[in-house]
Image (cartoon, rainbow, N blue to C red; front, side, top):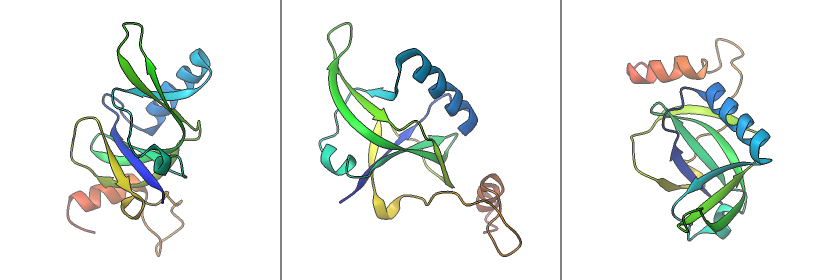
Length: 139
């Protein structure tokens, strides 16, 4: 059964900023990854089609497919976990998310759907507008 992670992207302004950070990381290291202290115990479920969902400025905003989970040691000998990510950053329908430390598991049923382009009056508004309308209690 597929399982996801959710993680705050502290200091990242928006999806475009996250893309720039990850492009630079890919150029410097040859892969896109995130380092964390803890190795997920449920790695098999995460690698069965799971993604990491990024929270940017209080909103779940994007996701990336998890490709691999590697336990390693840093230069000082401390244990780390390298989450290897697909370079494709997919925007999702934004929704508010309270702050938390580290990462959390996210059930597939609770994950926001990928963002659709706004086509017209019968469709959903753009994500930023929808988030503001939700914040105001209008939708």
